[in-house]
Image 1: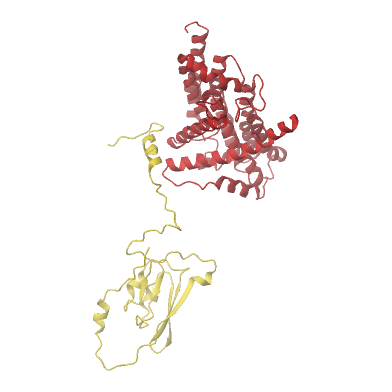
Image 2 (image 1 turned 180 degrees about the vertical axis):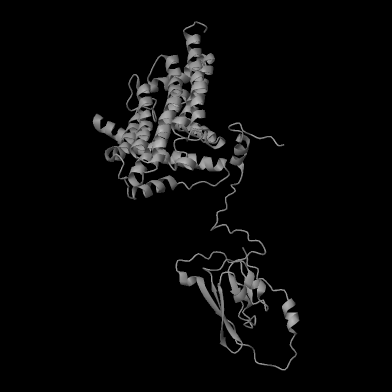
Length: 319
Length: 151
């Protein structure tokens, strides 16, 4: 029974199926918000599903000169990593399906795999646009990954735990008891949101995909089902990234004012989606050198400052 | 010189306002577009107009889209090839009897090429009566009535 329950959780709720639905709904919401910010109507509700069905029903064409194995299996690697990472994030109760000490680091690392898969996909496609896209993906990875990790580790350092569920349960009460810590946590949250935007390759950090210069970057040669899997895994990465930020910084599925846990999670996740869509519509794409300079000169020092504040406040005996 | 906004995110005020605005998108098939008064859509031949077969439209058409052929005594048939037509309105402009006019019909896409060619035959001339007709100059000065279709 226990094993069956675990399989149900992994495959149906809150695992694979729920994640797929979430990915499609959030993609629609993101596109709709983006359209409304730009004074357009935006896609109908079923558009993401229709896109996905269309991609799955089409032929996947693999270029002759591409690395056959890599090209075919990379979408599935990316997909598997994202689906696995979602199980450690609390969704409908204050505890996650699979929760263990240190899962924050594991989730952060699992979320790096899609990026690596994209870079390798670009590299293995053997055309100029995709290779440039792949290289840009990797260059960008080094700029946002460090601030993203440091931002996630700020609450972890504050509470002395690396468990996502524990952080999301304890952080709100801790902050209310010690309001001084709002400063480093808000700082880390801002850095986390901006670097998540880079991680998901959304504007202004959509440099690897840059459709005006690189066609579709690493995905230039992808089509049909393989592209569908890649797209779905990226949409899922969006959900996981948003849920991770909601859990680590906003208390995730920890209920407040007596509302149910899943509603609490959804409200916080939708808030972050709104912020991400707002950033996406407010800025234009920057160059790769500007992105890397911004990552290392602004984001990384800011996230370090957040950690430093935590260390000074807690270990320095100021509070 | 007006202030140039180069700061990233300088548009934030505008996009925030957009959230509360009605979208600029027109939901086309449901919502009909507004067509200006002199819109040039599909050229139409008026069978009762009294075409005299002067061929001015055929000569002036820059894309050979009009054909006039005689089908009887003072009776002509007009064929428009819409695949060639560039909707310049020159035929309507040149027509001495103002038989050709530009309608407001603009949804002209077709799956079959032959449907783009349409032929209209003019009505047979009325039987001769011993009344005084208006001179030809008066007819030429008449302004054509372009049918106003509702949009």
